Length: 333
Ligand SMILES: NC(=O)c1ccc[n+]([C@@H]2O[C@H](COP(=O)([O-])OP(=O)(O)OC[C@H]3O[C@@H](n4cnc5c(N)ncnc54)[C@H](O)[C@@H]3O)[C@@H](O)[C@H]2O)c1
Image (cartoon, rainbow, N blue to C red):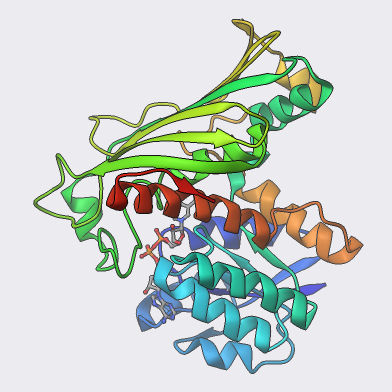
């Protein structure tokens, strides 16, 4: 049984807590939030002790795993402290706000012999998993191109809800590093390593409320020679299904919302993966599967989870877009 603590009891922590309650080899043992009432509410909800200072949980030797569900700028320092204290860490995305910090986190996990996982739960959506299998079977032949589209809605009240949102220092960026990072990750997971990127960012509808970008476009070169095009915005009036298309010499695969299309035909995912496609929201419901796989990997010592190295790859692409936008030229990764 792995004893787990959650640091940060805001919007996303419930998905971690709910998953932990169903995982046979995990037990939610403590919750932490520096806003006391949030920690108290979570402690009452999950029947466990609460803390306001995360160092108290790190000094508790009975805790094995720490889930980091705090604002982006805290992921680096909290992960480093937790690894140093001998805990395994599952952090929410992005792994960090700086590539050098993410590199240090990955190295630290190796150095102390603990696991570092990153929450890219959309990899566990049945259509994403099936797309990965089909690509590995070679149904598309050689991959020629990838397309990623994230067209979502965020408004003033979303950005005003927490101080860290919409800030370069605390969030580390806008639609790219927060909302679209999942889709960038899917593109590099399905398309393979990315060697260079160029990007443009802008702030349109939300410019009165945020300093970061609410719209971004990008071009990616993949090591296999494929080209990628990418567009993300928080300025639409609704949250559209995310779309990733992979185009190859033998046809195309489209991951769109819950669906998977191979050469325009819907693929029967359920009969293949054995999973029911849940009535999921536009951003995916893979937390349960991702968190479960992390605990399975702890017990079996396998690599079947989303490790820190993968969080680093997606962050490097995102930061490449930002640097390219600033410098007005492509960035080699
Ligand atoms: N994987 C996903 O699809 C997904 C979805 C939503 C959010 N997230 C990620 O989850 C993380 C949290 O997002 P959120 O929407 O829950 O934010 P939130 O602001 O609702 O919650 C963050 C919580 O962390 C607490 N906190 C801040 N500083 C702390 C400290 N020093 N010690 C302890 N607690 C502290 C805050 O009080 C707050 O309760 C972010 O990294 C975000 O990108 C991921």
